[in-house]
Length: 149
Ligand SMILES: [Zn+2]
Image 1: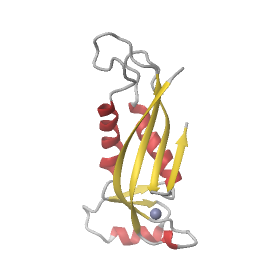
Image 2: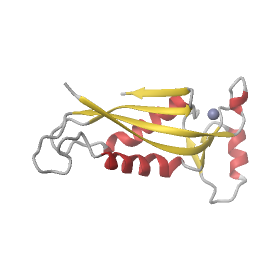
Image 3: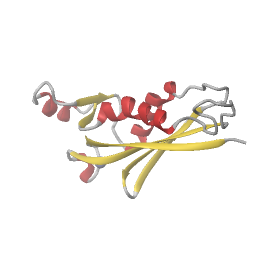
Image 4: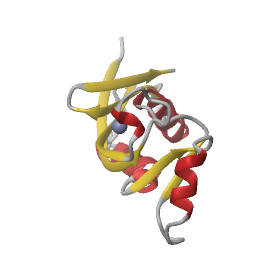
């Protein structure tokens, strides 16, 4: 028997899908939601701050903020193989937030990326077998992708 918790962070992030058959090839952005799903046992250690929890929600939030939000919020995520977009972005001032990634920045690929950013930081503190089981990415209110380990 295990319990699962979820916590999310939201970002305003630009991207494009360079070889998309329709409008997604244009420069545009989304209000992304990156939602971590964590599994484990409830902490039973008496008197500790996390007693009765899997992990403190604020600690999950801090990890999501540092390793996802602060990386891609108000940034443009571009595929390293998207030469056309990279030329445009390289013409902007040097402080423009461009994040070059080795994959086409679809919701599916961003979910895998976000999982990999967060996973090393979900650590068991009280022997309660914590692990990140999934990262869910909402690209639009109707569109989600999930990456499971
Ligand atoms: Zn899009």
